[in-house]
Image 1 (tube, rainbow, N blue to C red):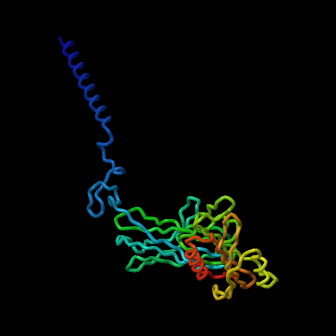
Image 2 (cartoon, helix red, strand yellow; image 1 turned 120 degrees about the vertical axis):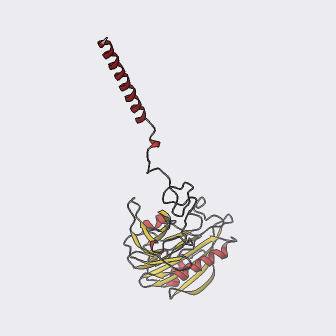
Image 3 (cartoon, rainbow, N blue to C red; image 1 turned 90 degrees about the vertical axis):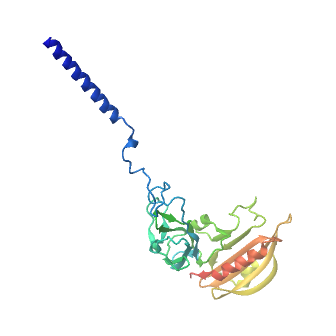
Length: 309
């Protein structure tokens, strides 16, 4: 009987131990969601919003940096140019001393900060930056700002400053785009309002205009001789003297006809300065209802030009 009683006790102890181990194993297999998960858990925002915004972000809130511009937005190589970058930040939660100008490098590296923009009571921010570029191409700029209640900084749209080898500094109206490939190859400043999407044969489409700003070494012939040579076969409609960056220049208006009803209205401005002859051209299709606006834009650009030489 003793042996039987001892055996019963041993079996009972073994069964109890097995059940206890099984219970501990099941507890260890409970889902991780029952444990504290600080990395994924949501918290009320800094202003007491408890709607489930992730930490550091206000639910439904967005910030914006608008009206970002650079003036001038075309500069020349091997000449120091002062560029004013401006923006509007109307959001009152912006941290004023956090608004920085970044120069993007395209290599995926942390972009360097060129400086801090300063604002006024109306949310207008600006900074002046000096550039002295050795090679032609484009400089990509972006504004970064921090806002109270948001751990993530807000970025503006990217803007570009063209760098040309032709010795001109100017400001491009927003409706025109610069040919970045031409700049990179050392070509002239070339602008269109149609994304350089020419019709077959290189024809400017209706509603389109192109502007070019090349420069050449000052020719040994007279300016009148050069103009007569370049405009041979064109119908000259007017000739006048205009001032560009304080330099007396010759402005010629003329038309070119190519048959099939295709005629261009053109303006060419010739500015001898230093050892270079700067030339500025506007071309659009004759009879285009936008012709007056194109001429206004061209004159706006002329008034912004500075000669780097």
